[in-house]
Image 1 (cartoon, helix red, strand yellow):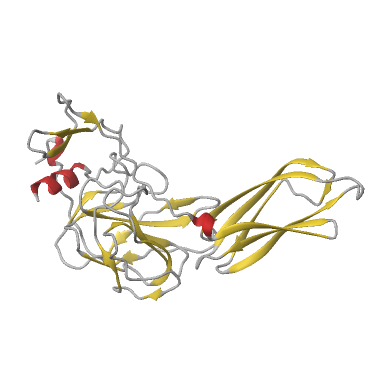
Image 2 (cartoon, one colour):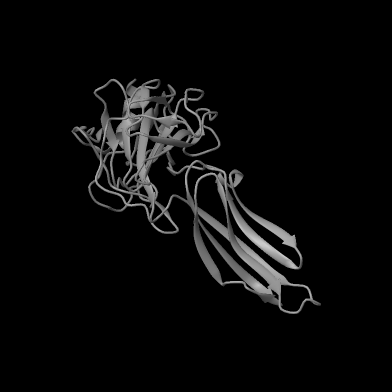
Length: 297
């Protein structure tokens, strides 16, 4: 328990973006792992990357249909959430009707035609190179203030790293995330009602994906709540399921790039060809752990 608490306490919430400290990982002769900002003989620099991989390419596709001398490009979205797509063309040769770039929002579970290309000279072949990008969510969705219920049962538990935490909450997708230290197996529940968009349930303690096991839920205003580092095999919801606030989702774990048992909870939205975290608040106070590893009291 002491080992886990020390690791979780390292990632303290910090109110402003400061230079990220160098963190060292040291394993002593008894096999006890310590994380510290003090250089120690035999210690190695620890590099932490708190991100997630969702493999949306399996459910969002660019389709090409060739017929009667024309090529039709369509975006197919098999997700239970809208996606914003962007299509660009380069290397155009003997082509009419090709925009340099275009962006569309493709509703959940639908297909939208993006462009139809035709040859300027029907006797010659066309040349083009498409580039297709996609981003979860609809940037036009209005968002307002919402206070989230606590996404766990039990406690009290404490924030081990907050918004703009200099340890790992520095990128656009996790800048406003909160890490809450808690024992493995703690029940995780929906902080807000919505539709389950994506789940991962098969990652082990140090799985191939940095975010470990997770659940992503689309809320009514277009924002999305994401619950990361969940226990392997504990996710009890499926994609497309409508869940109410307080519904059981999974159990907390220590999977992916996790330095100790905790829940990483973040709210994200599409800000225009980008998926980014946004500030949020819980509906009751949650205290922060002191930064024992960095000399706090």
